[in-house]
Length: 172
Image (cartoon, rainbow, N blue to C red; front, side, top):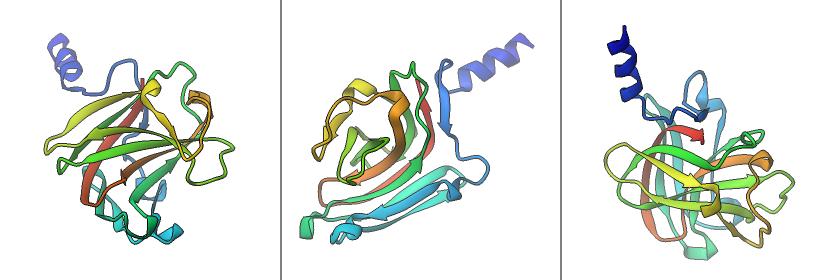
């Protein structure tokens, strides 16, 4: 019995004091929304698909015509007040990706907080401290956990082929 419990604890990659935000159980496709810079005249193109491994964001990011992003976004109703970081379990093609977080009451779509990571070929757990999220697009203030209204996985800011998968997101 103790060996079974220990094996489970050692196999778990989500920190023990974490609150799962998304584990892609149930009907995750209905919770995620894909969009690109085409909503603002850009030419980036892609898709977000829910697979047996989680969410996979693929496409071509282009900075032509003032563009430069594709993203999949999950609306949430805040993070726990004691949240210090957002964790993601990801794999990808070696490019730089981002987690965008938006605050409640932010109307302009170009205002958000971002933190970046590099997604390599194997699954890896990445912890993004809330203090590492920088404001963009004229966003002011800091990222307060209870005010977070959405979290997005984003290919952003450069010309490249995107391919990133996410199997879990949590708050630490």
